[in-house]
Image 1 (cartoon, rainbow, N blue to C red):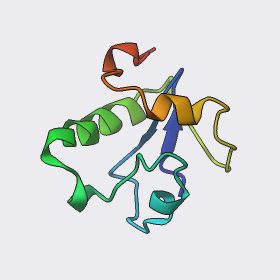
Image 2: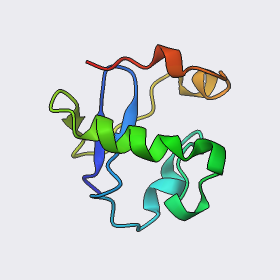
Image 3: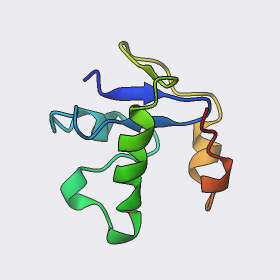
Image 4: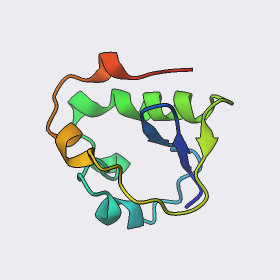
Length: 88
């Protein structure tokens, strides 16, 4: 599962590298990950965002498990936060 990449304040999954094992779906502490075939049409743009950002050489591949950030639960409840996405 080396298809995860970390940016300044966001994690992405490279959909071209994902092997569709679905392990990450249950492991996500805020239920933000769904299988691509189950994405709500209103969220489909996130597949493209994930693909584009994971190809950014400044975003680093995550190769080992990390604990959730302390504030992950609070951020999961914030709506309309795309304007906060930092893209180096």
